[in-house]
Image 1 (cartoon, rainbow, N blue to C red):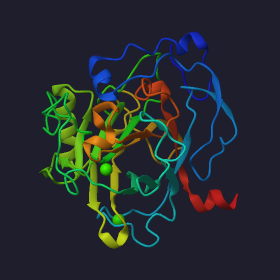
Image 2 (image 1 turned 30 degrees about the horizontal axis):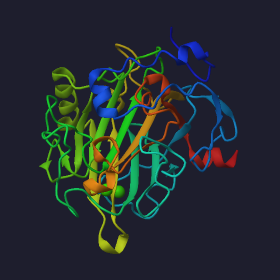
Image 3 (image 1 turned 60 degrees about the vertical axis):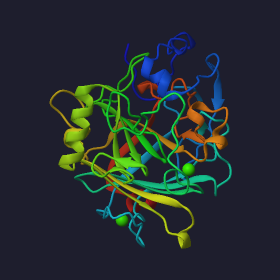
Length: 332
Ligand SMILES: [Ca+2]
Ligand SMILES: [Ca+2]
């Protein structure tokens, strides 16, 4: 069965989302015991959301954000004055969901201000992340006990999410079934942007570090997108005078990265809804993550679903693409 929009789903359906793949169990870390199949009140982390105070059933697209038409940002790792004034803002991670609950509530430890918009040709995200310890720069590049090859840039053993960074999950079809995860092409994907490593720069150079699911075909496709510039990101560690952390600016070209069906890509000139989840990963000293999956310090994400469900397409939030500017919306 397919679901779309904010349709309610019944509790029987909620019980069926446990058949994670082997990878998912590995990548997602420990899953919570039992489903949280109850309605809950959502405290939306975004500054502006029409959904504040509305009750949702977990997994039923509880979050939304709008990408308005705006100016084209420069992917240089600097958030210039006014560069994202025409973009909707994302605030985290306090109030987000977490694999290491609660999501960090100490803004100097881990927090983020982000933006999303489009310029009619490409979709853009930017993130100004505060993180007091940058893995591989402020501390040694230690490895998790379960994967000594985590820093490899390959699909066989590498973990593209290993390090401090952000992961975006998108479902451009905006359709899902009970247990489906990302396909790994323009229809749905999970993509990592890391301070620790990148396909283009290797270990020690931040950038897009590929994504999931881990198959040869998907890895080759993602690498192709990165090398073509259809998916691009700049990553810059902030200087001491800016506070510790990093900047990510990320561009996504709808063709080929946002595919509605076999022949159609998302048209940014039309109002469109796509599925979205955002995950912020914080790796600090190994001992700081004691008891957490992979000894990661924080794994916090936007869509308010349990950790065993966060990569299910049906658990994503909604990104609403509008052909008009934010000014137009503000004036209404
Ligand atoms: Ca910039
Ligand atoms: Ca960190």
